[in-house]
Length: 148
Image (cartoon, rainbow, N blue to C red):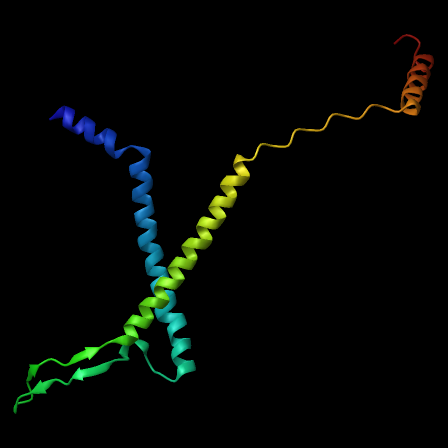
């Protein structure tokens, strides 16, 4: 039993597993954020523009519900819920676009890190004037400080 627990601990603590777990948790939270963005912000604006109150309620009734004389439902209505389908397509497009943008920047950052730093260019050779001025400076320093 001890070997089993040790093997399980090694498996669970590998970087890949922990990274995957973090990815799943962040992905779930990201999905909720996107769903809220679509449901609470985007779809109401689309509904306002198209004159519909709620996209999730858009449907075609294929067979209406059947009620008995007491008003109890005998058969549920059969509906074609195209409004929810449209809303799920919007969800998918936003998630796909977000992932595309995130991956695009991640690849750019990875390429930037992988590029070797440009080697510093060697200092150009001093001109004759620079050499002469350096010699004059050195002579003047010796004359001003004969002990050094």
